[in-house]
Image (cartoon, rainbow, N blue to C red; front, top):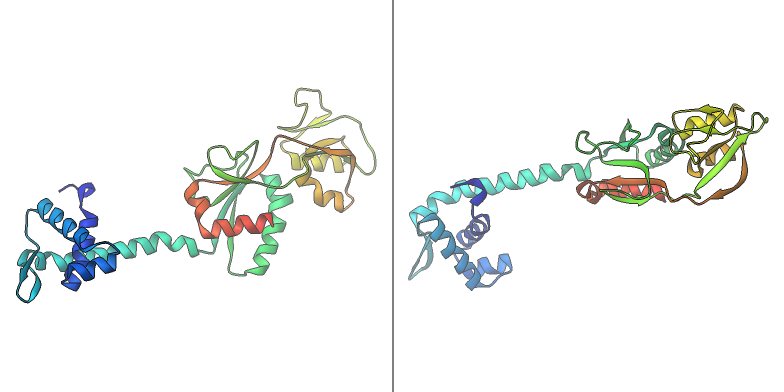
Length: 263
């Protein structure tokens, strides 16, 4: 018999009926009707080509064939339970792997993880640098942070933000724009180009021009007086998203992390 064709539901009903030696009590355990138990047993007997129970004046009895298969079946169900527990163990794990762009990790993620870890000393984090938000098919990721106009092919939640903001150094400097991949006006001429928005902020602090970057990344530098803001923040269709495939997104530890990061 092919493994994919194992009559698992019928075997589960057989186990209950064999333990109780009663279709009625098995039905109570399984929350079905006695007739449904009888149908499952008959279907299982037809599939296996054996008789599993016989009725006597003393009630329901297992046949020798049913008796022979019962112990291995119960061992198998115990193995199933162990398998489920093993698969679910990650739900209670205190280890989380997060992929994010370097500048997001440095300016937004790490300060929040520090506060989260201070509240739960058992938490362990692995941080992966990933400009594209990480590849869940190749890495053992629990969560990723991506820049875009939505979560893409995954489940996700937008990180609250005021959009884009233009920054300049506090000591003055050139008036030219600092370019970075994803910067508004990417086709214009820049006085300097850098690899990401975080480096653009660093360049503005150094007095190399003005940088238009996600406000999310500039909050700490603005609060610390390391840069000055030019004008008001402008809305953006793009932003940072916490994302994960549906199985990871449903995990208790991932949901708790998302809630803590966005609180």
